[in-house]
Amino acid sequence: MKQGPKSCCGFSLPAVGLSLAAASLAGCLYSPAGAHQARSVILLGLAETAVLSFVAWLFGLWAGQAGLFSGRGFLPKLAGWLFFLWFGAEFFRTMAAAQTVCREEFGTNALIAVLPVLLAVTWQMDAGALDRSARALWWLLAAGAAICLAGLWDQMHWQRLFQGAEGGLLAGGWPPLPLYPEYFALPLLCQEKDVSKGALLPFGCYAIGGGYAFVLALVLGRPDSPAYAGLELLRAWAMGYFSRLDAFLLLVWLAAALWRLCLLAFVLRRLAWLNGWKTALAGHQTKGAQT
Image: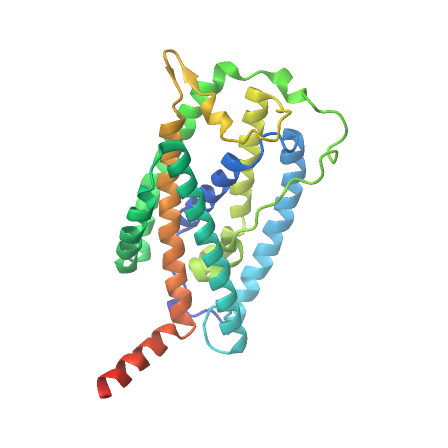
């Protein structure tokens, strides 16, 4: 049974990629700096990502053919609610990361007031509107990355790559491989023609994590204290008379994180409808009207 056209959200791959980029950057900012050698993150991470991409491709093909997100039958309903919980957990994790940045870096709890408004607007939007806004945010992220690299260029030194490089690749263990529900929900998120290409999305997250670890090692080496987080890389930014542009870069990430929250809310609504929430709500309204 193939996936029905009405069961997919209809997002483009760049839109799903933006959601994953926001999640990957959150992991880079708040993970311990230098927990793993840059070469381990790059080389071992590539092997992990290749396996994950292959598994995501196989799962996407099977899920599309089996109608896993059709909402009809026991297995589709079970899978729908499991993914509902997974996407819900990602929603709260992203919200917690954004709230942490707002509170610790800007001293405000404005996210608590802004988020309900965003969710109310998202409830009325379609996937096309989110797609169009994703294009603008990609340009903003690209500009932020270029500014960040320009401000760190003079502080990069190759010899720092070899600080604390004793032992082999596995000296610090395998680097963690984040798993996001988008990898395995491609038949739900994208059109059928994009599912196979969407299996390459893990390589985008790998490029972000590996690139961040590489630049972090060039600028800071491998910090001895586990108290250092990846956020220190942004705080090291300087260009001429300007320094501490980390606030602007964090605002760029916050914009992407808020967009990810909107996408996750859209997906949660679609999963709830596919699993009978809309039918149940209509039934309650009809019963109430009769009484």
